[in-house]
Structure formats: structure tokens, C-alpha cells
Length: 144
Image 1 (tube, rainbow, N blue to C red):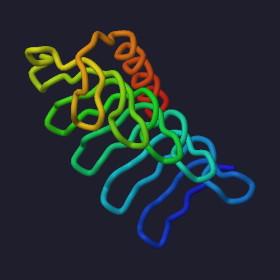
Image 2 (cartoon, one colour):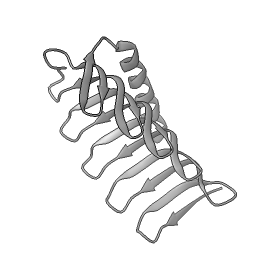
Image 3 (cartoon, rainbow, N blue to C red):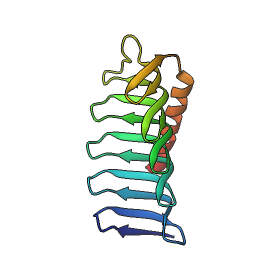
Image 4 (cartoon, rainbow, N blue to C red):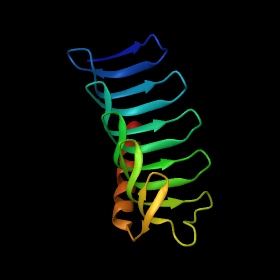
């Protein structure tokens, strides 16, 4: 079943629902602060592929689990800085690469294993970055 619902806090959901009234399947959620999510829901939470666009136009494109960034994806800040790689529990965690607004990766190159906003060790991880780019492109494609 597909329909819309406006919540008391001002958020709105337009999409598929389960028989027991949970957001389930593909949907679009608008939040009171202007953020929006386009993608899959399971048991009411963002799950699987999706795109989250924040009120400052920063965006995450990739995999979600239990409502958080989890798996492969790309986070693009509103200033043009980008991280492509692995996420866990809503945070950067794992292999990836940072790209600055001018398209460079820094010297030395900001590629390796990250925990939060910190690079723990430098290492080549182009396979993880390629996978993150593919997942982000797939998430974008399903949300348009």
C-alpha cells in the first residue's frame, strides 16, 4: 500500500507501508529541519539503499542499516569535500578516500583506514572506494 502521512512534529512520509502500519519499502521522508531521505525502509527505519540530503545540502548516498549510515557509501559535504568508503553506525569507519573541493586527495594522499574523522593508517584501498562509488550511484539512481 502506498500513501502519505504527516506526523505531529511536521515530518512527512510518502511511500509504501506494511500491513501493520510501518514504513516499509520505498519511500520519501521530509523532516522538520528540511532534511530529506529517499530510499528503502524496513520496520519504519531507513534500511538498504538510500539518499539523505541534509538542510545545508550535505548528502549521504549509500547503504543504511537500522536508520544509520552503514556499509558502503559517499558523504558529500556542502563545501564540496567528499568521503567515499565504509561507514558503520552512522560514522566513517573503514577504508576510504577523502577528496577536497578542488578534486585533489591531499599530499600525502588521504586514502586508508579511517575511524571517525581521523585516518588511522594510510593504505591503498581503491577496491573499497570503487565499491562505495558503485553503491552511491545505485542509491542515487533509485532515488530520482
